[in-house]
Amino acid sequence: MGQTVQNVVFDFGAVLFTWQPGVLIKTHFSEHVATPEQAAVLARAVFGHADWHSFDRGVLSAHTVSERTAARLGLPEQAFRALIDGIAEHLQPMQDTLAVLAQLCTLRDQQPDQLQLYFLSNMPVPYARVLEQKHAFLNWFDGGVFSGDVQLVKPEPEIFELLESRYALVPGNTIFIDDLADNVASARARGWHGIHFVSARQLQAQLMPLLA
Image (cartoon, rainbow, N blue to C red):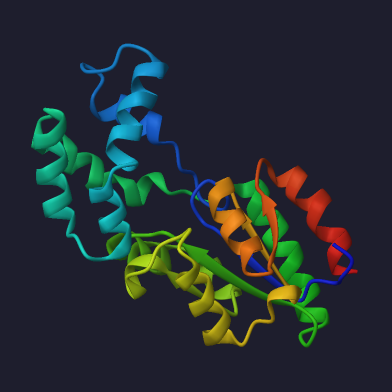
């Protein structure tokens, strides 16, 4: 990348917090899915739909997305509402990535003018508030944006632009970490650096040399 990074921006789901849609579907709709492959198909139909994206965006309520999704897919609404209500508990810290974040915090504390930490997460408002209340390590970040709070979602360029303007980020000095390639591509299109997250070990190996 040819340049030292000063701003590190984390996605949350499947990077810092567990996000396993197929497990959620299998847990709540075991009578509808017999195999992991079937669970994955149903998970895409639930979480890849425009209604869920509108929930992420903060323009559709949990009640409405539950009602619509259950009707659209022929699922019992009570079970689907239980799925929605249980997601905040499903989002648990990924300890290996959290260790990388802690390492970055130590570096930031040693050189506060050279390293800042931010987050950029597609996250419905109810889950964002729970994460803030439950997990003190969110205070390690110098700032961040939840999609539901600003009614923008990744990979739209506007949400990256908002983070830039809010915290005066220089694109060429900023790196974005996300498990979804489309989101990483959107960041790169703005001139950010990007890491497509696979594992904490891979992240550490790719990121740390850029912070020297």
